[in-house]
Image (cartoon, rainbow, N blue to C red; front, side, top):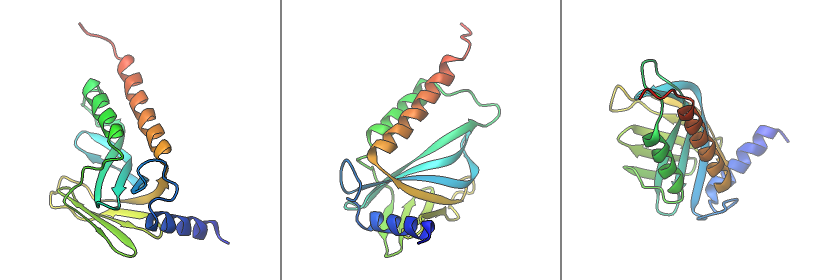
Length: 172
C-alpha cells in the first residue's frame, strides 16, 4: 500500500476520532503545519504553525513559529518568551476564535484574521483571502502530533529565543 495513502488514512481516522493517540485532554487534536512558503505577519517571517483543536467544544487556537525576523526589527526578548510560555501552557484549553465548523472532509476555522480550511483527509491547510489586506493567505500541510511532541516543539522554540537573547551584547 502506498505510504501517502496510509498517512492520509491515519490522519483521517485521527481527526475523526480525536481521542486516538492523544495523551492529554482526549478531545484536543494538536496539528503541526508546515507552510508551502514563508510568509510575513507583523515583523516576523514564519513557515510553521500549530493548530490546537478542541473537537468537542469546537474551540481552537493557533501559534505561528517565527523563523527569522524582518529587517530592522529588534531581537526577541522576555515578552516574547513569556508569550510562548503562555501559548504552551494553554494548548489543552484552546481559547476559541469566531467559529469552528466541522464538515465531513474539512474543518473550517474562522477568526478576525480570515478563514482557515483544513482538509481532514489529506491534511492540506490554507487560509483564504482575508478581510485585512495586510494579513497573508497561505497553504501547507498538517500532521497530527501528540501532546508531548507539541510541548517539545514549544520548548525548542522557547529555548532558541532564550539562546538568541543571551548572545546579545548589553548596551547599558
